[in-house]
Length: 172
Image (cartoon, rainbow, N blue to C red; front, side, top):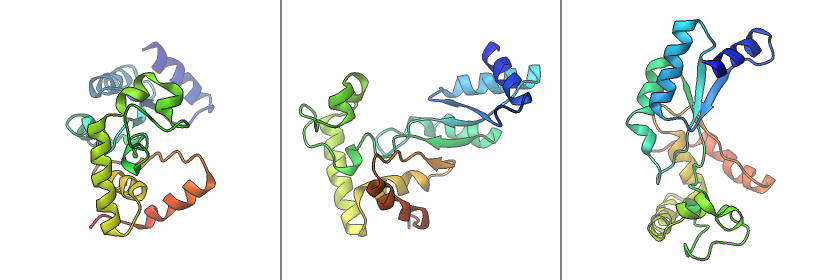
């Protein structure tokens, strides 16, 4: 209530155009939609959840909810922190410049040997398709029903240039 009220004030003042949420469960998004409608407050136009081949939790509730109520889904972590791009070889020894090594905590907990093995197999599929594993991971997310766009988060211009061709690709 209070947050939606403050965001509504900012929207009516012309300081923001749209509002959205990030990593909210489906019930929270639905609650915000109901409060917005009941109290004539600004309504979320998008949700930013994590989504990739290793983390598909949003498929059962959040994606159908967003489709039904017209919210865009701008998903983050399409590479599963680099696991699907083949960045990790050992869950106990992450690359020194990786989030798992630099930040630890939840980032390190997400890097598992099982995930790394899926990443290896994913890399083989990408190679057979003639594209990189990173491109295939972003392409898979981009082409899923209900996804408006993936947040790719490149750290370098080279990474951006490598992923831009995915815009013109489609899964077949």
